[in-house]
Image 1 (cartoon, rainbow, N blue to C red):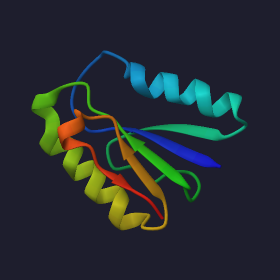
Image 2: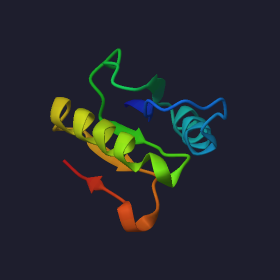
Image 3: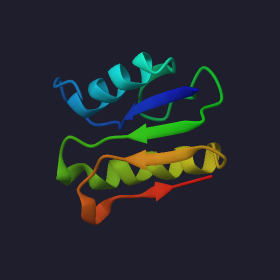
Length: 92
């Protein structure tokens, strides 16, 4: 399974810890992972996409990233790691 781990386009020097944990989990499961910042096309067709947010004030940027990946990869599962009240899960 190929999984892009998406950090939306906002400026931070803090690595997204949630995505790093997901990368470790999926690599141990034999999946390939790819870190993506912004609206970059993944190297391969993803089966699942994770989008994260470090800051609640960045919800608009996160929402744009979710819309981008949802529209470009409608067959992929899409998960966010935002606050539960904003959580978006789309299953195939």
